[in-house]
Image (cartoon, rainbow, N blue to C red; front, side, top):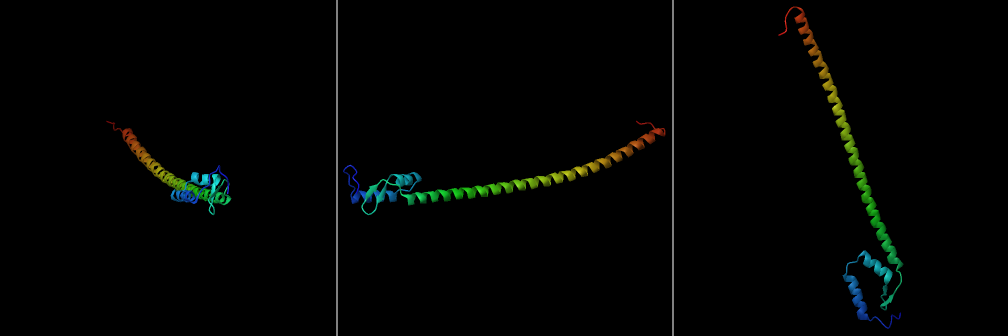
Length: 135
C-alpha cells in the first residue's frame, strides 16, 4: 500500500469512486485521464500512478477503428463523387451530340432555304429582263 500523505482510502471511498466512474458516461478525456493519472487496484483500493498499457492499446484500437471508418466513408464519398462526375460528363456529351445533330439539321434547312431564295431571285430577274417592271 502506498503512503499518500497519511491518507488511506477505505472501502466506502473506493466504492464511491467506482460507482461514480460507472455512473458517468465515458468520454475520451475522462478515459485518457483515468489511463494516465491513476488506476485503482481492485483488490485493495490502492491508487497507483502508472500507465495501464492494455487500456492504452484498447484506446489505440478504438482510434484506429474510428479512423478506418472515417476513411471508408471518405472512400465511399469519393467514389460517389467520381460517379456523379462521370454521369455529368456523359450527360454533357449526349447534350453536345444532340446539339451537333440539331446544328446539322438547321444547316441543311438553311441550305435548302437559300436555294429556294436564289430560285425566286432568278425568277424575278428573268421576269424583269423580259420587260416587266418591279413595283
